[in-house]
Amino acid sequence: AHCAEVLCLSLQIVLLDFFLVKYVHPATLVTLCVEVPLVLHALWYWRGELAHRVAPTEWLAYSWVHAAKVVVLFCRVMPRLPSSSVPLSAFKEIFVSGAVEQLFSFSPTVLTNVLLLTPVFYSLLMFRTSRSIFGTNSHRVTVDLVMHYDMLWHVAIDMVDQVDMFRYARLAEQLGHNVAMERMRSITNLQMVIPFLLFLSISLQGQALPGVMVDEWVIPETRPDSGEHQAEREVKATFRTRPNIATDAAEEPRLPRPPPDRVASTESSAELQHLEMGLPVGRRGLDDGAA
Image (cartoon, rainbow, N blue to C red; front, side, top):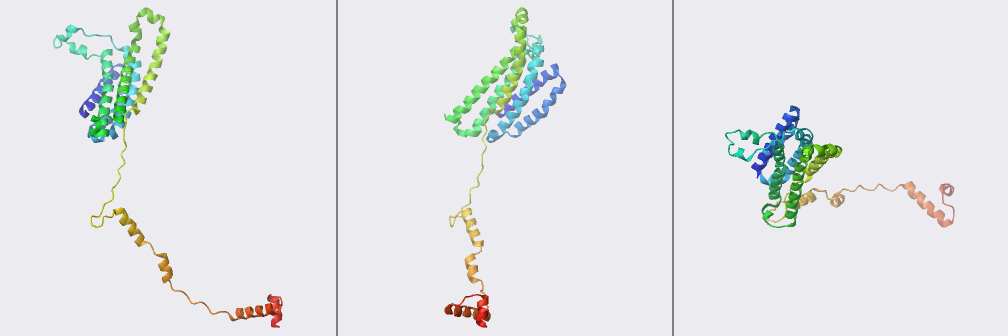
């Protein structure tokens, strides 16, 4: 699945760039600044157990670049492609009459088939993601698995509809000259709205690939002899290193009290005598009593 995914992505990038360079401008190769790292990213993360992490990023980058390409292909390339068809007799003389050049020529049919590689690429990404998320349970019918493949089915159908909308770029050719002249205004309005719808739908499909973020938790080690966990030993070590406030306070030496002041004791005894005699207590009273 991984090899088919990388091959499908690389083939579509090369063929679409051929169309853009031939009918638009070589400056459209600026998209290779994103597409080449995208292919290298897909080649580097080839392991299936990493698909649930890398596939959403790859699909998001691909969707935005592909949306811009589709708009240019619809507006500038598809209307200018020559109408050519290969007869059935050409397959018998494929190596003689040069039918290979006709089969691989720049035609609307070839462009449509190249664009149909998008649902194939998306299906391969979803398959690898399902194996990464569900593992061996991908063979069992569960609610999550049904929703996963239901999303794949609906998004793939939407992509086929998007490719089918490219025929509106050559609608005048299909309707005929007389009908096209009568409905010229309606055809023009329709062709102006479709590029906006294509870009919006393809860019929003960039969120249509689920991923799972796995949080890794460190399991505490267990000492085989005591059976206690590393976290318990750390807590005990913390309590051992904390100072014992009660013990420190008890062991702290007490200073001796200073001897009582003789003046203070004299004043206290004088106040008691004044209270017993009914005299007023105060500094002046004490001075009078002393006098």
